[in-house]
Image (cartoon, rainbow over all chains, first blue to last red; front, side, top):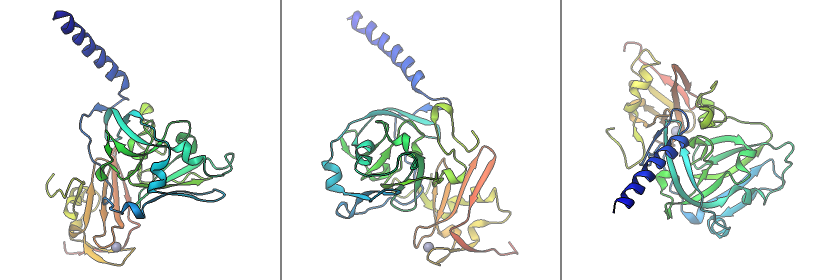
Length: 206
Length: 93
Ligand SMILES: [Zn+2]
């Protein structure tokens, strides 16, 4: 079965080349899923959980757990890049597109250009609203075909894979739309305000 | 890491000793900190510390407020003490 062997070898080399091209500068490949928390893992019962879009909006919009799950699901497969230098390729998620959520609120898109994602506890992270739109961001509640593990941000976390993973707020409970950019939990402690892994924007000043 | 609770990166406050020692010229784990949120006073060694590659977050064991946040990035240290109302430091340490 040498044909099969050769084709596997070829595939292996091609995969290695693919991997190299998918690792941003300074990152290494991680096969596990490291846990990085800045606070306690919450345990809010799902019947008390909600997700809200608030801030500079005409009227805040709230979804409870069942309402969120009833929205159309997407199953993005994406690479994620942690600022602590590990990257994980082809991660499988299930969730709701942020485009879909933001379509449900009215706001002035000429002046409201930033968002702060806020989580259970005191965690926040800020990003331009444009980075949450255009099919680039999700509120995810499934990982690898299972409900998202609380240590990885379950019941639901933000997923914004084109930015460093701290922007993908664990235990997310809502988005606050703002006219002024407001540095979040790590952004106010020396980390980069935007965090593009391909430009290696790890720290303030990078 | 020792003292790991569950699968979180939560440790007791003594885990913040090394990071704190790089900034403060005295033994910080023996310092008494009063929480700006709930007012509880605890020795830093007996608080909760979330230690990760991004930084060290020392939290109040009563209300989980971040008492001290430290990130050491490329030779610069960032220190946020907003959550600490008072630090009581023994001068004879
Ligand atoms: Zn407290």
